[in-house]
Image: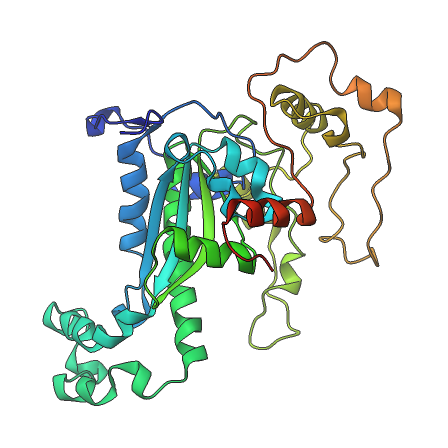
Length: 342
């Protein structure tokens, strides 16, 4: 078994779980992990159990995940998009999320199961023979519709897993993959032809503060949600906002005090050179301010200001391979025989 797993199952009374509001409000895309801190296997299973019972249109149940441990496959980061290399080198556990279109071939049986167990009833128009006329879906729906439905289902499953991780004190981050990386993953894990790889997710304990420097920027509430018709904003009541802040669903936005110092210390801690230090001033979000037109470039730090973000010597605990340029990693993959890149 991987050295990055703890294979003990606790008593329920000894498990502290965040409620849904806290788990959702605390969730961040964490990119700095404690690389050698083991993760409890039961928590990994809990994430998968939550993904299994996620909402699924027509009981499709096509969500799939392959769990990989970094210490057993230290070069797994080669199969990921270029922008994710630092994170995947640190995270103890990686989830490769896919959906399986083959499940559409047996969806009629899955819907019959919903009828059999009382989840679907005759009052809502469900009858055994009627289901047989419409399924399997590939006979009546174009491929792009099936891919869309399967991707939505997979998103539901991933979100369930992420919120479960957050409630159990774990951190996660979804990472995309280039076309070349997707093809490489297909070969590496012997994915059937009906599998579609969508996302890689890092899992582990955060090396950065779990608040991730504050909640992430989002557009104004009233530009996203409407009542009765588009253009008529759903009124955001301040009393409700304050209530949700007290319940920890809504948390302080970034950047929180000390965030720049934190990420530059982590940069040094993991053996990355000065050229990888964040050298711009952090400031408030722009996307939630409709009065700001365009994208304002962050202000650069002076050399003195940059040095001030990491006072003293920071011991190197792990030497990461810096994020490399696309042409370099393309050549690396070619030399290793990993597969074609984009």
